[in-house]
Image: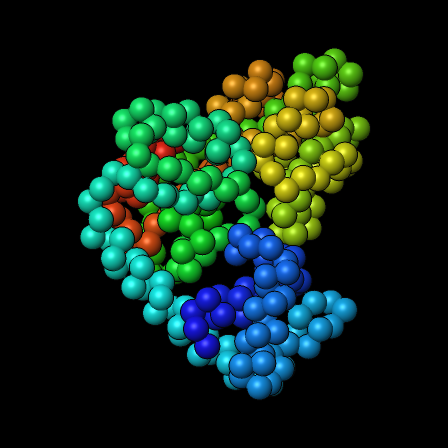
Length: 287
């Protein structure tokens, strides 16, 4: 197996379809299918079963997977070590973060970065998925949860207090909620993944058993925009709610845990000039 074929093989183990694998590699679907057929012909075995739910590894595919991962790790290590010696403020830097962080903070910072070092190209991916820094899917990540991996450089950039907000139109229609009534008669906009971690929603640490969930979203930016549209009450970082022109409900109350943003990098890449400069600029924008 050569490295190009290995990349095709690994992409198919991580994606449910040829189309998704092709998208992750930046090639067309026909190329992935053709390279897979050529690889199986070269090895004289079938690596995947074409099932309705996607591509499933055969016993031969399972046996090849460990070797493919070791090849990937070696290729990534070689690339990272070489780039770690690069002192040029030019080249590509891949950044991943949430849509809210990208739009509110990073875009203005990237414009300033371009003025200082026009040779740096930033590829920015807004994704709720956690991209792998170890496999070089990204060079810099801004995450709301601290990664547990000891192999990464992790620094908390900010910790924002979180409050409950509503639009003036919503308050004119429903009035202000009363904490003791557990938001009876009120509508909520919630961050969907958080519902999986608790039996019922809360609002600024007040149980919201009597509230109706009007909308669940998977994005902090969508929470803000839905609240601004008058769909319901919603929690968000205080300064972002104020920037949106929303009304803070119960200013004396805030969520027990702040909204944290962590900068995450591969340790070798913090010695690369363009990555280091980009991380400093973007972190300063959040701070």
